[in-house]
Image 1 (spheres, rainbow, N blue to C red):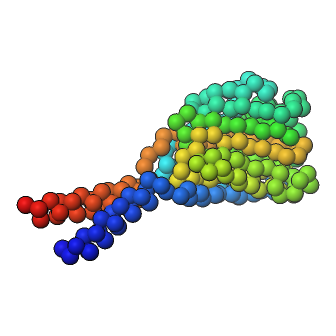
Image 2: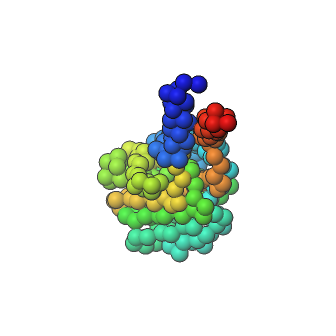
Image 3: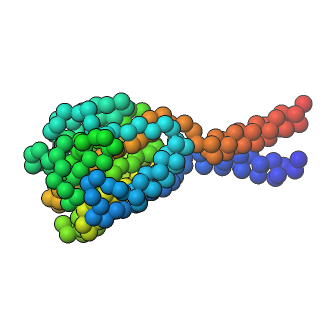
Length: 241
Ligand SMILES: [Ca+2]
Ligand SMILES: [Ca+2]
């Protein structure tokens, strides 16, 4: 092999390895909104987004979902499975803040779990979900959000995957439900949902991946990179004999 070609082969192999080891995060979002939908559903667009999110997230591990059905009511927070949940901000009482089992209507937070009644809210506050072992995906139903309070930017999702990231959750004119989820090629250990207004809202059926597995594409790249470096080294060693 021409020496220049050998150098190029090693460089390509190392560059393939580098693209795996120092990968930029690739974030894909999934959202669907059912403006003004009833608290009993159906939430057709939201459910479609949930399905798309679930399919994408499955590539990163198995999904775990928090329905808030087994949790004590109020602001105390809890740990379930791989997730710990902390709620901050003012306590506006039953039906608004913390884990709730109240249904005031579609302009407020409400349950979306089939056969369930409980959900989580934090108007003018935040809820932080921390995941043991990290996660590559996060998705949830958001209920009761209304643009009249702070336009379309009143609910944000923040997390750190090596870089501080902020995503906006869709907000409806007349409450109802929306689904918002995302996958990330970089892992992250927690997600904070922050609301900048005193709009009453809820979140329910919060899903995340609990086992991180190498993405097939990255694994193939890594194997290809190692194989090329190894082959070039073997050729160099053979020539020295
Ligand atoms: Ca629920
Ligand atoms: Ca509301």
